[in-house]
Amino acid sequence: MNPLVGVIYHWLGGFASATFYVPYRGIRQWSWEIFWLTGGLFSWLIAPWLFAGLMTEDLLGVIAATPDRTAMLCVLFGLLWGFGGLTYGLTMRYLGLSLGMAVVLGLSTVFGTLIPPIVEGDFASTLLGTASGRIVLLGLLVTLAGIITVAVAGARKDSSLSAEQKAAAIAEFNFRKGLAVAIFSGIMSSCFAFGLAAGEPVRVLSAQAGTGPLWVGLPVLCLVMFGGLVTNAVWCAHLIRRNRSAAQWVGASAGTTGTGTAGVLPGRPPLLRNYLLAALGGTLWYFQFFFYTMGESQMGALGFSSWTLHMASIIIFGTLWGFAFREWKDAAPGVRALVWTGVGLLVLATVIIGYGNSLAQ
Image (cartoon, rainbow, N blue to C red; front, side):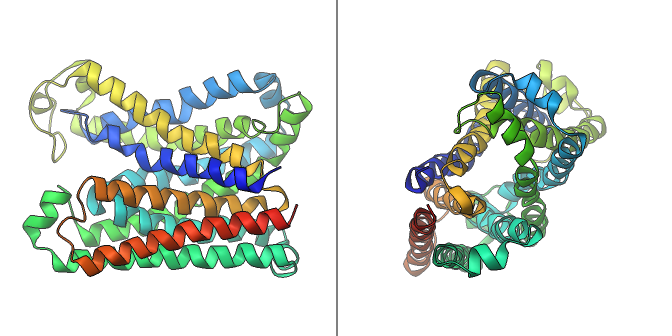
């Protein structure tokens, strides 16, 4: 185990997560429910089973040997997390990459990191009772400070811009609606961490089947993400029926498929382009947890701190994408300096947590 290598894996996962929505921005003449479900099939079904089948030993045998209670808990937490993932995309639409990620992932960081050790009764002995645990806890506090700093910068940017400037940066900007959606998304998104914790018996079975330590967590993703697929598929099916948008999958114009979705321009969709972009975005989304399981395998006894590293990495790269898409171009210099301060705190937090984990080895 090498916690510093684990930090690098988590950075890769954070980059994948922060980047997955970028290809979706290039999709044309598809309603939200169409591209979200299309990409989601790659995120929650195709990629998890494909990579788990390639990288693990006897995947089907491991899944078949998994205790029913374990499988049910993984799927249940996946279902609950699905509500967070479902509204995560809406948050990006209403708040943009930088501010949206800060609010969602801040709440997810707190719940997803602290609840598992509290439930397992390890919080006092593992976090408070050891020097390494206290350093990891310090890293969590620095992470929250960085998240709050980025969120404050986003709020200041919002208050200083005109309605026209907000619309130019984020077409469907709506601070109040976006904040409400982001809070809900953040709380529900933390359930993914609970699903990973519940899947520990699956990791044991995978290791017993001969899978290497970097890949033993991949079968767990198959179960948790299946739960997320169910939640998202049900909601998207409702929207598809309401908007009568299913024909967009075969090239029908958005303007001829019923009520449509706000922001969708009329015209026939470029099918090959849309399918490729949806597949790319969906696979990138999966890769965040592909690298997460690799990073977690390197963190040792304080593996639950992986969730904090993951969240911090996503916000770092999400903020960088926000600058790349010029979401901050009209913000005052002091506001831009504030958001860079938040990014610096998040980078520092990942170093602190990696160091704390190395002390525990």
